[in-house]
Amino acid sequence: MTLHKAPAVEDAYVPSERRIARERYRRGRTRRATAIAATSTLVVGAVLFVLITNSPGWTRTKETFFSAHYARVAFPQVLEGLWLNLRLLAVCGAAVLVLGLLLAVARTLRARCSSPCVRWPPRTRTSSGGCRSSSVC
Image 1 (tube, rainbow, N blue to C red):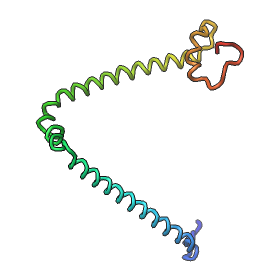
Image 2 (cartoon, helix red, strand yellow; image 1 turned 90 degrees about the vertical axis):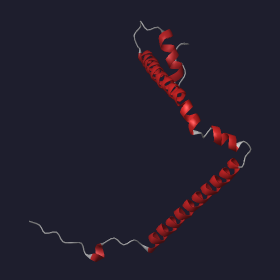
Image 3 (tube, rainbow, N blue to C red; image 1 turned 180 degrees about the horizontal axis):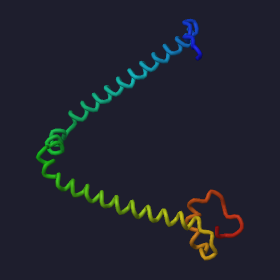
Image 4 (cartoon, rainbow, N blue to C red; image 1 turned 180 degrees about the vertical axis):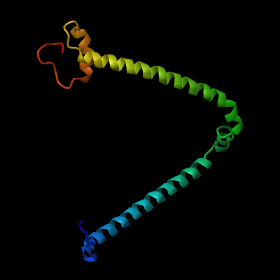
């Protein structure tokens, strides 16, 4: 059985004065950058708020665009458009998957039965170098 000594207090890590000063400087720079970002965001937000709410046509926009009544009236059409987008996403995703797989397989064909006309289109898009021995890669 071996006994382990507890580390002495003088063996504990103590950062140097230079490191402490560097960390203090970095914390100060971080606080300064955060303060600048927050202040500029608030100023830009306030300016945009004042410009938008004082612009001509704001009352009409507020009455129509931010109206709960118009939102309820338009909601079924919005859902219909969302459903169309989801169907389109599924169809296009499947088509891209099949086309990409076909191009990948055509790119790797090595048999004689696969003519250059099959291997050439995907190579033109993925090849980094030019043709070496023939005019058709």
